[in-house]
Amino acid sequence: MATIYEDFKEAIMKDPENLSFTERGIEPLFSAPKNAKIAIIGQAPGIKAQTTKKFWNDQSGVRLREWMGVSDALFYESDLFAVLPMDFYYPGKGKSGDLPPRKEFGPKWLPLILAALPQIELVILIGNYAQKYYLKDTKYRTLTETVAHYEEYLPAYFPIVHPSPLNGRWLKANPWFVEKVVPELQKRVAEIIN
Image 1 (cartoon, one colour):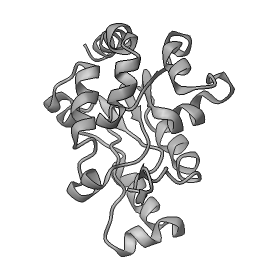
Image 2 (spheres, rainbow, N blue to C red):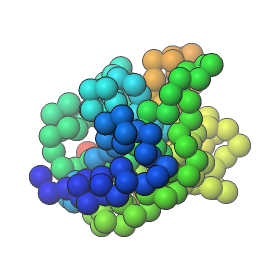
Image 3 (cartoon, one colour):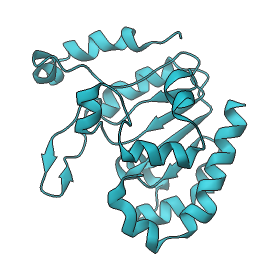
């Protein structure tokens, strides 16, 4: 599988802003196959992902793959998916969950990496941080409104809620997401990868 990971990994690790991670032997966690057709942009790796060096390696990842309608093997072993969070390092623990991704990281590295992936047909924007950065003024006031109006961002972007188990209450309050949006996401993913 041809990838541009190594092209960027060294530069990211040498960046003074990432020195504390590099000194601890922590490598940036992302995936950038040259043939990727779908980019998945979320928040930042969780502690389990960073520890195991495998992105979306938790219950959130299981749910994400279900929502996309893809198997673990297709997700991890094909060259169809680029995984480019807003920060490639676990940001640490905060009062109510993980800390947010560093504000400077995404704008510094994502445009460079995406420019090197010319076959991307769809960018799945997971959660508020990714949606705020990519959708800018076209983003609605709340994440719920943005996700409800997902069709307005197609064919380039597909905004969704984070698949975290912590979002169970949100999913219960917004059944339209699983009923309407998830099937459309699965359809769009299938159209691109088949």
